[in-house]
Image (cartoon, rainbow, N blue to C red):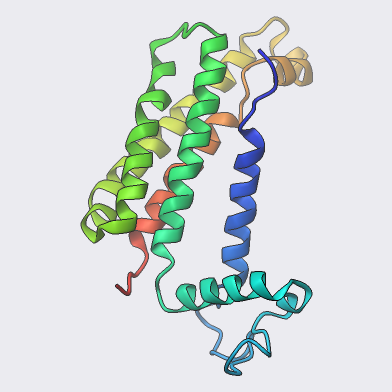
Length: 198
């Protein structure tokens, strides 16, 4: 009944995705505009890399190279799997506190291992990345949308309804939690659409 243990890790996954996004070159921007093309690591290609220690800089530059070469699909698939695992655990935690009053509360629990398995499978298999991952990801997004509907309905059905929106939002079901699960599905879908070099 304590605080949600794994919720901060979901925030960390968001930070990792932000790091990946900062390394990607916009499609309409010619190479060399945003990043210096000097060979080696003596001249960091992203300006903020000058502020970090060399071992971290080396890892980030390798990640940047992989992103530019179309090898970011595996990274996003892992992020989708990890995000699904953390969101699924939070759903289990929250729905357990509610004694699983509604059968629909089991759906994110059932989908979590499927999305985790598809995300991790996509790391090693192009076939899984192109077939299983998008299907499971779309189902997870749909499940998140349905969950959002139920959570918002639960808030509105609390005593006072819209007359005490802030109180019901704080003490009712977490309205944004199903969206996090849907976001995991979106990451998986995005990963399935990316070009893969190897």
